[in-house]
Image 1 (cartoon, helix red, strand yellow):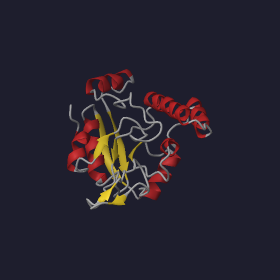
Image 2: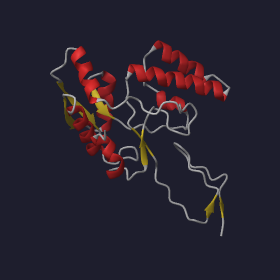
Image 3: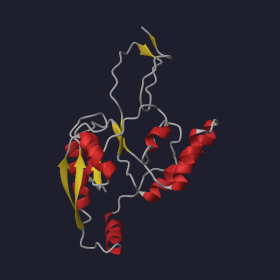
Image 4: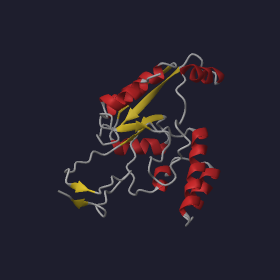
Length: 209
C-alpha cells in the first residue's frame, strides 16, 4: 500500500531518499540490516489498536512542524500534510500547525506538544547522536551508556542494535526518511566516497583525466 508520505519520496525528495526503518541511517555503525521496516503499514491493525484503547471513534490532535527548509525536510508543510492524510485513514484527525523552531523545541521539551515533525541534523557521524533524547527507558539508557564507552566497534554496534529494537516497541519516535544531501562533483574526480551523514572526506579522492 502506497501511503501519502511514501509518495513524497519522488515528488519532494526527487528519489534521493529512502524510507527509514530505524533512527540510525544506512552505512553508519549500529545500522541493523535485519530491520527492513520500523513498523508495517497496516491501517486495519491500527484501527484495532485504537479500538482496544477505547478510541474506536478516532480522535483529533494537532500536528506541528517548523517552516524551516532543510535536506531532511525540503518542504515541511507538504510532509506534515501527507502524514496527516495517512493518519486520517485510521480515524485520527490531525490539524497541521506551524511554529518557529525555537518555540516548537521549547513546547516539545515542556510536553505541551503531542505530535510533531522534526528533522535531525547530527553534529557527528556517530550513532549516539541519533539516539539523543529518543528514549527515557532505563534499559535503553543503560545500553547507550555502555555503547559510548565500548572500544570494540563490533560490540558497540550490537549494543546500538539492541536499542533500536527497544525503540520499535516503545514508539517514542517514528523514523520516516533518510534523505541524502545532494553532492555535485566533476567526472574527473576519482575515488570519492560519499559519507552517510555529515562531513565529506576527500582523503581518497583525486583528479583523473
